[in-house]
Image 1 (spheres, rainbow, N blue to C red):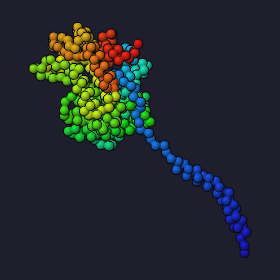
Image 2 (image 1 turned 45 degrees about the vertical axis):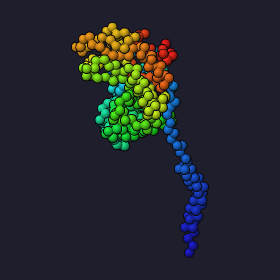
Image 3 (image 1 turned 180 degrees about the horizontal axis):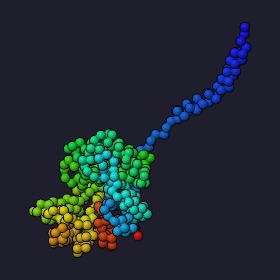
Length: 359
């Protein structure tokens, strides 16, 4: 006996499947196209460097209100110092309220804002010694860059060394930071480094490979002092130190000259005695009768009276700035809050020499 009902149902199912078949083919082709759609490769390249640079550091312990607007207009970049590295391989911003205040003032006056990363060399070494530690650190910095709308990161590790493996880990860290910050040319990466005037593990802790990763280096051409009582006449940042330092990094080591940013101190140090409490800001030196046209003065501080302090006056700063303009990529000041705010300002002397408008 023929099962007419069963045949009828089978025919209905076949017709239904034939009806759905074009739609299934279409959906499958869409899925295939979506899966096989080629992804655009990630582009990693540095942002355009803003010409000859004036970089000013601004530490968390300074008053933002005490530094006039025109001093921010003198800077292409303001580095907020510091976000300290932590034991959990992250960076903690010291005084977020101060940072926000600084950020708004710097931006209002046309300066880019970087977050400078400082802290314990041991913590830097531990973090950078493993890929996991570096990745955690870089992810945290990238989150902060986006959260606070930063223009870049400045690494202030004092210091990686060739003697303990941190040279290699610093190189790896800078590459990973460069690969992240330089995606689509969005953010800058800089680093504060030794003046390099003395051979040894600290100077050799910066590999030539790192020259490819940072957009520029803030070279700390100062703090060449001694506490030995027999030497009471050593200037901690003489003009001759500029020549030695820049010649080493650019000519001996091959750092691109446009990446070599000359560091200038805005403070003084004595020689042949303790540095604890006896170093003074440039503005403090002037308040004790120091001459803005000189490089030394007789001052008193920390229970010591009438001792000699060495600093950079306006003529020396002008001379250094002119040399950096002819032979390097910029100048850097440590730090803005130590300067005089009137016409005796060292930053003003530099900008006047360089033809930089700030009024």
